[in-house]
Image (cartoon, rainbow, N blue to C red; front, top):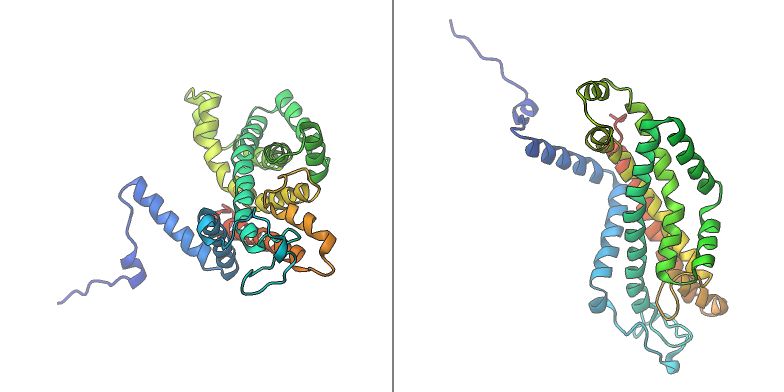
Length: 303
């Protein structure tokens, strides 16, 4: 009598068990990337951000003119073959200024994110894990910062520090960390009584080891999503400071400052305001779309 071995579905045959932690990590990353790019809106946001990064990296070669060179003979020219996005009141090419301005925008976003991510995460997990008076002090300070609108608080800090790009970065960073801290605290509160944390405590693990080895890695996904969504708010705050003359100073081609310079001519020379405004809108929307996609992929309560 012939025995026929059962056949596995093709999907089961293709599934392989990872032989190491590195293989498991690579498989999870590839699956997450596939899910991330399967959403058309997320893909569009990622494409816009990738394009901005490429433009910023190769700005000297992409720009068609010197972004700081004056040419009064070509002042306030509309978009055309010679100047794709037109010129400003000094005859400077707006396309070139927009291209170089992407460097300033990414510089602000990257530096603020690098600063507020670790600070907010450290404050949040420390507050949530230890509780008691430490939690009370940290959260009351956090509440004070959150109680003010971010732009108003950034204006106050810049007024105290003085106008300038670096001072604007510091001011935005001081206003951007509290939401990260509140999120990390909430995640830590849901984890600190978990069985694996109790086991680690019974084995004599120090609080620092528990925080670094067990709690922080589990909070990272939520923090990364929040940081990505915060990038849109950082861009808008930086543009607001630049518009008010408290951020990047002339003649730097910062997008908010470009709108401020063009508002006096916007009735006749609409491109001076519309083009940098559209750039701010598009990049901010792209970060929001990417953040939504990351939330769908990294949310542990998802499917």
